[in-house]
Length: 400
Length: 224
Image (tube, rainbow over all chains, first blue to last red; front, side):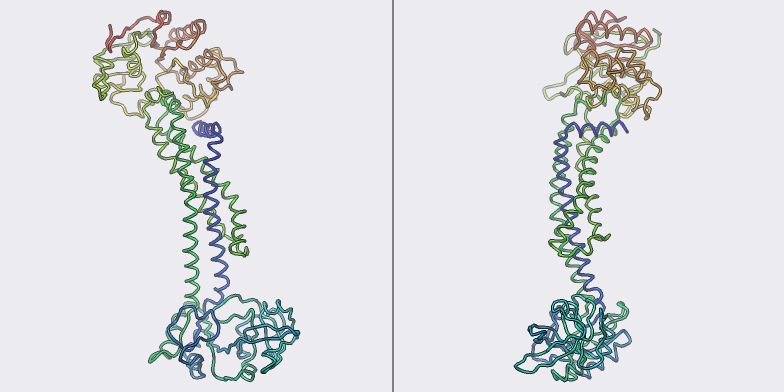
């Protein structure tokens, strides 16, 4: 081993406790930064996965007032003086101008009481054409509805009520009107989305829906599932130009914009918490600087000896830079190893889902934290190393 | 001893500017030391002995005048070249041994060799030098703190010789040793001189000065 590196290692070993304490600071800093980064990365991936499959959807509703930007998530139209439903003519116009960009379909929606095996609950009921249902959804088991008296249901609803294909659900309250529908199929999970939330819903054929609730041709929403996400703006413009040119008839919500807003917000929050975590690394940097300055002061006489017997300044500089680098590398890698454990716990507790923990994006903050940790220690050691190398050999030799 | 001067000081002054006024440590001092000579520098405290040794040892440069070490003017050299000269041409033996506490005896001797050749000694030179100065091989792995004063000074002598320097500078080499060990160390230094090394010893001790071919007495930075 290089003799200068040997001297650095032995100096660290000689001052074991001091070195451990300085390293501990780096460990804490790296763990804090990596864990926060991992939390952000996992949150980002989770939200993206839950929303991105639906990120290419335009949600068109009747214009009821200035947009809040998040009405797409709510399901069901808002209040206001204007009509809260779209007409058949509106739908046909949308279909005409947007069909070339992807699938255009309407849906009716309401929330209603449901009764399953004698127990009452609440669910969202969608009404869609059987063609739209089979195009938009994927089945976990069963079939798509073939008769008006059957429906597909979301997986959360099925799991919660222990529903199987062939079971029956009563929709509506016993006091007013109630109708039974048969479960034809259970859908694959679709997650939270802006166009429709099917996981906890009953999706029935439109004919059944309008027979039971009325309002035929008064759609709550029209969705455009754009085939190529690059066309989303063009589709948006086409609908806007054809329906909103004189007055606002429809409001159009671009789901990709919500996704980018959310991921950007998560990115900002992650950067903020990582910056707070970085303060601990700053404290560690001060500790390393202090340790290195103490080392230079204590070893002034030794530096004098080394210089007097022919050690170049750059070798002295290297000796102290190696010392801080060793502390940094040891601290950063121990911190990185601990980050796996602590990061996993943080993700589990704060995000509540570790599905994306073992991914490159999730581990990237560990690499960043290692680099920052090492860089901080080397920078902290730079001035003490420079000071040591510039000591006057005669004065250094006199020091005791 | 040859007639070729290995150390030449011509009208050398060293002045330390202090807030209370300039301190003249060396005052227009001229001196020649021939290759293979054994010179003792003597004088009371503050007479300029250490300053002179620092000039010859390339640890400092003069305020005025010229210092030539093996024909090279140290006043015209930068820190890198001065360090290189210390490494290759000069061997330093200190009163308090000045071994590197983090290295064992073998590593202390090998250190200047590593600095000069950038590779470990595989020729057995370090082991040979330790034997030559009377260090038992079992002590080679001992740290300086585990050695006696005499043993430390022997290791320091071995270290000073590892790069085959022309000049040996000894600053009170027996100052921290008992008289018997001191005598042995001086015999060793004298032997090195007999083999061709130029030796300059700074001392207060007349017995040490007794080994020298020539004594230089300093007072107030001048040769008297």
